[in-house]
Amino acid sequence: MRRTPANLRSESRGKLSVVLNRGLRLLPKQEEILTSDAFMRAALGSWGSGKTTSAVLALLRCIFLNPYDSDLYGEDRPMSIVCGLSMRVLKASAWREVKRIVPPELILREWKAPDPAIEFANGHLLSAYSVKGSMEGASVCGVLVDEIHLLPDDKTWLNYQARAREPRAAPGSHLAIMSGIPIDNGWLRQLVDRPDDPNRLAVYSTMAENHYLPDHVAEEMRKSVSEADADTYLHAKWRKMTGLCFHSFDESIHVINRTGDRGRVTHLSVDLGVRGCILFGQEIEVPIKVRGRIEGVTGLLIVDEMLPDSVTLKQAMREAKGRGWRIDPRESVICVDPTARSDELSSIRSVFGDKIRIIRRKRGDVREQVEYGIDCVNVGLRSSEGVSRIFFAHTLPRDKMSIRTAVNQYARNPRTGTPVKTNTTDHAADCLRMLAVQFLPLRRGGHRVLDRRA
Image (tube, rainbow, N blue to C red; front, side, top):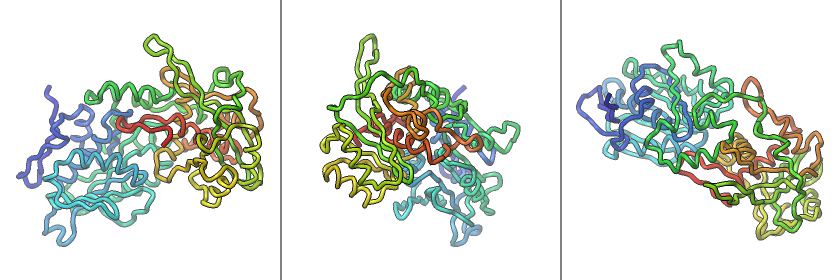
């Protein structure tokens, strides 16, 4: 059976035939999503499975089915929207796919600011939105929400889904489509996993089904997932929730008989408040077997911890400096929360000098996202290949707020699947996340390799 090429005809006019997706034939799951008549569709899949392309193609079909008609719209225009967690994430994923798939001759005009937008040759407008902003009252033909698994609940999705109600749209052409990974955060599975509803379609695709994915990219993705998460991120199966965020932790493996080297460069991770935490971490070499040979890869050893309570940041930094670890302004980094204020950064520099490197991720950066950080920790604890790269010195305390307690208690809300903020163990968990993101970043999406020093 021949696979359908990515050719879409402007069915309402019957005059325009164009080749999309650079002429690449559709994958079977992409064809299933594209040809469905369901109003609500979910393109769910593993990394590198082509799920975002599936969703974009379906949205483009909706756009082509709804050209501008002066009798219907007058001075108005038919419109669709594509949404992401943030504009930065959106531009790197779904919007990028739109630009890759659509040939230039179909784009009449394009705006880059204040938000990206396109007017197609048939007069249909496509606009990009961040889901962090509100959208009320608009009526559109089609809606695409990318990275749906990163949303904490269904409120944002339901708001955007409700926008797909343009009364002048072609009958049966309205579309509300999402793309993402089948992480079982409760609401998402309940929303899409309804096989008996003809108006809802959920399609699950894996990177093994995407023969366009280069072998070396697939191998890098396999290295970037924990053993416990391989079914979700590699095989597009709903995650089996354990309730614990750091589900790869095993005390018999990860708490080791090492105390750290006070002469080795040491890094800090700081999360302060009424109750806070400071973790001290050192890079270590972890031996692994690669094609029959032993090679060393970067690992992380947590060597010390402070749990300051109701003290100023400057006081806490002075105490950290006095612990005797080598915090070198030329080589050490200090990771802080994205909400850290400029005066707090000044307090850190007043103790360690102006040359100390402070890592503060910006809002919208994938490396700032909680789930990404949790994944970095779990992969560091145990990858799908069975390699552990995060360890804890056996001398660390076991207080109720310490990191050795946090790795066993930092849990998810059983209803929403989101990490629970208890103001106890979550401070230590946040510090561990920031260190893992900095020194053990993941490779995601096949085209982005994160530099651990970035």
